[in-house]
Length: 514
Image (tube, rainbow, N blue to C red):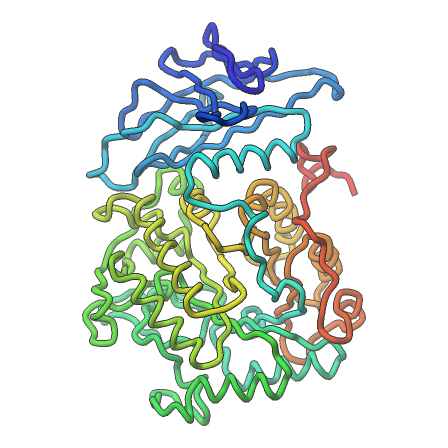
């Protein structure tokens, strides 16, 4: 059978426009056109299987080609979500490509659908990925393409994030020092992201402390939705007060007035804090949290089982009941909005993929959390202002109806010299896919750093927000003034930055070229 884009499966070979892409295709694998009733033919098809079992893997051999550049046909394979299952592509030791289905819940075994992967082909790789994602958007109807999303205004202004300046030792006093330092140099920050360190958190009595090199304790859990003493006027450690005249609203109001800030964002994890919320305390009982223990996908476990994973799997996560998660977000966000906070950066999002057991699986849990999160953002904040972070899994991407900005890489690591070229290359290549869903965020950087110009130049062409995480008094204003106009605005590329066609299948980090 041949369908859109000349895609066919015959004699155990999958071909596009007559070019063999996969061979040794299993007999139970079929393709169906991606067009529906009344639609024009779409240049693509869905790979299906008429024999599905839980955690099944369908394998194919990859076909290589030595065709000349002028005859190149690009093919894209997009594994999708169907029902309660997520399809992924992965290689194996036999140099085969597997399609693996996973639910993340041992009780969810029956796959009631048949679509596994969308495949399309064409001569322009950029148009191809755009049209493919839009086709999957129409098929799933669970997310929206970047083109129709409202972009938050912070993308047009220079900003500052407190993370690498203070890590979790951030305080209101430190924030004011950083903002004042940038103002004096002639590059005023018009938005600030107050990162980890403002929340009221604590460990369980039996918890095992794990403090990363950035001072964050992954064993901590949220014990109150309100700020800690460091963001209260004249606050003292261990003596947090509930007086509005001394609380976050007063601190934020003074900060905005003093520094002519347009936007103040707060950081929080999608589960409240890195270790979730603390079960068994009165401040959290409305949200019916439960201590659950992450179970990473085998693919993640084999590739990225870090010390952080060890901590989280040992201490568990205090997970808000999915039926109560909107109440949790709404209470948190309405409090922040009442204090003058303009929106939030929501991180650690991919942790949800490990917590689906007992909740109908990873896809169902992630979608419920994201629906609640976006509903709360819409209700409490303006400008569609949210930054997603640590959210690259397709569970999250295919659930993003309105979220318009997402971090597209690992962190900026100022003390790791080997990380910087990999960081920028990763963002650029990730943007080919992630940029179809949201505007990728290329992350912060230090303006006074050996690789500052490299990061600054990348951000200038990335179409992303431009913000730094300098410590107060440690700035390169000559560099910043190349990026920031006197009024604090920035000149931004209209679309996400992506690799040029000549290096789409190269590794510019390791190819020895300059």
